[in-house]
Amino acid sequence: MSSPLTKVLLIGAGGRLGPSILSIFDADPRFTLSILARQSSTSNFPSHIKVHRVSDDYPEAGLLEALKGQDAVVSTMATTNLHQQRGIIDAAIKAGVKRFVPSEFGSDTVNERAMALLPQYFKGKKDTVDYLKTKEKEGLTWSAFVTGPFFELGMTTGFMGFNLQERRVSLINGGKDTWSTTTMPTIGLAVKNSLLIPDKTANQYIFIDSFTVSQSQVLASFEKATGKRWDVEQVDAEAMKNGGLEKLKKGDFSGAMSVIRYINCVHGHGGNYAEYEKTANGLLSLPKESLDEAVVNVLKE
Image (cartoon, rainbow, N blue to C red; front, side, top):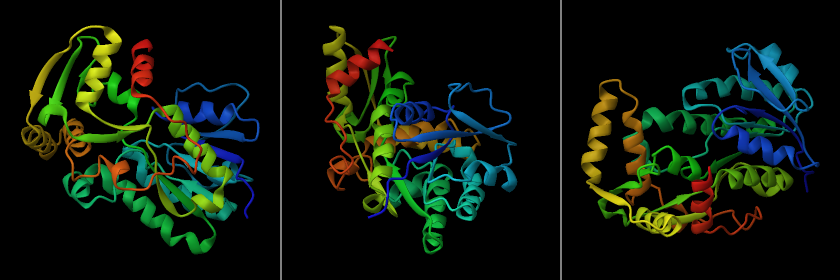
């Protein structure tokens, strides 16, 4: 049995998901966490955590210095920068790193119907995993986490159709189809715990969720928490998807939000993966979470 992988380099610590992963690792004394940040980054990090700064093109010399002595790399890089992971993977192999966790977090990119709809968003993720598979023989293992939308961001940004300030929701096809979603602290916990049992989490997609719910169920929870009825707009899923695709054809990447919402909320595109894939919730000792509690926490933000 392999030893736990406790020396971890985090990439993208200042992004949307990075801070949650940072705080989970930082709170566990078994781990030694350091950060790889671009020179141009303006993010601030806790003073007790070592930060390796490299130029924005991630030169090999700077990467090797940061990767020296690391057991694992966790990447939460933005979608637009995913192509840069390949060079980091190559440097990780040279440095003797044992595990690479790519910036996969989100939808089930193995789902062919989802990939066909939005290759601009998903292909970079799948290409990274495909590249990692070719490196297994060189001693680098990988774990790619399928989490669904990050629950808190899906609610507070309007990504999943909810407007918290105006107490309004856009229900897609009546809001009946279910989708799997994970809270951000639980994503961080899953990544951390996977490194404690490296043999059981190597070279695989890892499916996790906090709960699998419908928009209608989430709406009922918000109405319960706020004690008020919310305004509801009914949205045709196909019209929403086609509108998003039309924007993308014109070079307007904001259309991707509508297409990803469609992928999540319309069955057949992998959004409800926890209903047909075996999740690693038990293996990774993840907590059983309540939708009502998660909604209350979102309203406190």
